[in-house]
Image (cartoon, rainbow, N blue to C red; front, side):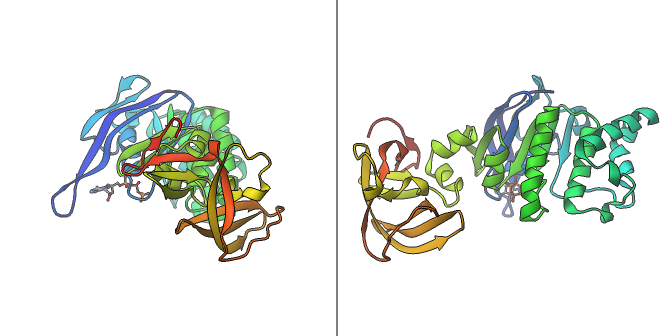
Length: 343
Ligand code: ATP
């Protein structure tokens, strides 16, 4: 196992008009041994390029990559002790599952007996012992994903690099695959870097999340830190569904989560309440919860309640709503950066 570090890592591509495009722009990351780190950001933010540089598939323009304290910038992928699994699992269609998993071991000239041991071990961990004789086309998406993971672990890599490995699965399978993958990572304890644009995946799986936008890191933290204490308005609205409400007030932006926004009449104690006038417009019933869409000072805002809460809300009429002071986050109106301290 190993730590992974990037220092001022940068990748510049040449755009259509010959201009420089910084896909990754000076990223510093320090991933602990055994950690599950998620790289989260919108399409095009540079997360795949960052992962490919760590894996050795892309050469950095500048900066360093360290695996287990060694600079690996000039090492080819196979010398980095990493295993990669991408969106398209790229299983060999003409080989059965056993031979697909054996492929990297054969390439490494491992003796046949030892290969068999490793394959049985990996198949056992991933619960695919029954599938070893099948061809990839005879497998479901989830099974293929497990085969790809088995092929990745048989070499006992120090680091896993996973690029949206669950994106081919339907919503229901994704939830169980997420759970399986996380349990599996905990069991074998291999340092893992996982790329996704899906905040639910990031929140549910990561020990920590690095939120990336336009080639730079906006914030690194545990899911709780990122959700509860976003460092800027980008992070505040990228995580959370629906996102954090942002309203202008004087010379700053106030942010509050939909679940922290409620009718003032429902507040027990009132000492720490910040009043806000809410005009509800539309309600959405989602089974376990209810979302109320409306506006505050002419800006769209959303309130979220458990369905069990009874609400008498009349569309189009202003209501006294409130947020508790501890749940109100303040951001700079120019930079979008968080303002800490009393306000
Ligand atoms: P997605 O989630 O859509 O895969 P991403 O966050 O992984 O996006 P990257 O694939 O890393 O983003 O791309 C980052 C930026 O670099 C994009 O603007 C992309 O167009 C650009 N880029 C990526 N590869 C190249 C390349 N080989 N040549 C030129 N530009 C590139």
